[in-house]
Length: 628
Image 1 (cartoon, rainbow, N blue to C red):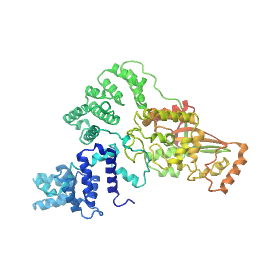
Image 2: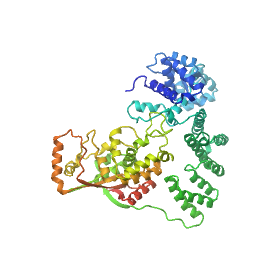
Image 3: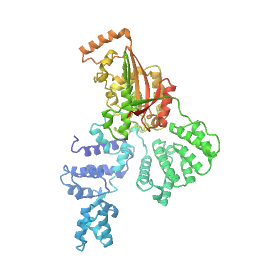
Image 4: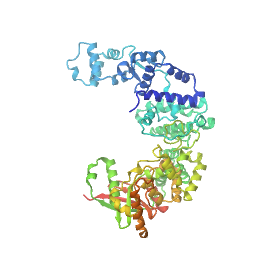
């Protein structure tokens, strides 16, 4: 249950955070907003924050009903008196869309007595058409929007600037606070010092505002839609303005603003390409080497019939890819361009891995699930059940993990480095990752620390993974999937597991069985190789991992009696905090990707299957079909 004034407290927290971090760079308007907000009555403060969180842009008193605000009319007067809201007539189309059928009917009745008898049967669109045909539309609009009725936030209410400076990301807003208030997210205590802020001059802050306005114009101003719906003159003006943006890297050394600028170039160039302006698109793509710029340039050159140039660019991408997705698309383009030029196409790369078939009978649980997502889940879960077996002292235990397992291992291995105090990485206390996590600069900016950690792993030291698991358990990390380590339920195999010296205890401080088995099955040297591969392109390589991990456990016969003794001791000491004992078991693992009827491998799945096999871990594809 959230406190009554949670939203006001969060808004004040945001203002205080920006003042503390960027107070020396704020202009008169921003400083004035802080002072004005502080001078408002509590009711007026609450109403302003409520308005900010509502979908506008126009509001009226009749729409507002908040039990904690005692005098809404007085709060409106206070906001108007401080120039934070202003009365304004709404756009005609917005007003008609906002009004209900009942409101339109009532207004028409009040305007004219000479109405069609069956007006109540007309649809909303028919009512509007009737008002237009009868010449009543101007009267209707005045009735729906009398003077001093509708109001909107004024230009003095610069709250969006504070959101941008507080979060330093366009994708976050005040709603982020609620997730923390509800306990859904528990964030790491990383540094957000002034020394690590992203912007250090007023010019950089103005650059942030300008870039935000351009992004907003592109998304909400009709420039991101279908080519047939785009006003080309308006789009030309937009392109002109983005080409006039300063080089933030050269002028201010600001990579964050530079990435935002390149994002605009890529979006605009892609629309020019869709419009058929390939030469103009080429010129705009040339402003950045950021993927997918080279791919799109190659496609534009192909459209212009300049296939030799396109092939040269593709071969450059293959020789020195900036990320894995660029390498993959270059392979496809290379094949297509060779055909266009009448050359023998290179042999397609398919990876090396085994496949096998599995036929399963649907269970009652399987039959109860519906939809494509549920179908995928039941295929994987069904395969895991059928592939888990116990023969004598040998156990084959299959667990559905997909991307969650190896991503979690990555997050645990590098936790302290991910949340290290690096300039511009953290803007506020509500981030699950640094802002450059999936940018090409992430690894180079932390290279020394990451390389040192990889060397430690390669030497066999995996202690930091276990330490971080215990120290950070439950804290939000974009890589770590905490529920995964609580899902492994071995009740049906409990007796057999006890024979292997494994318990199914879930003590608070115990090492989870899944993590324990993973660290037994995979050496630190192997994990170091895996993480190096992921670091080449973290966004791409965090997906595509096989669905199942199958553990093979074998107990040594000569220690069977000792295991039984240890188990009896465990039963006598239920409060013992030791992790499940795997000391006398040999644990190996294989990985399996499960494909149901009609499902095909994706590129990233093929890459990972091949990579695991080349690095000593069996990875295969199971093609599952139903017996019915």
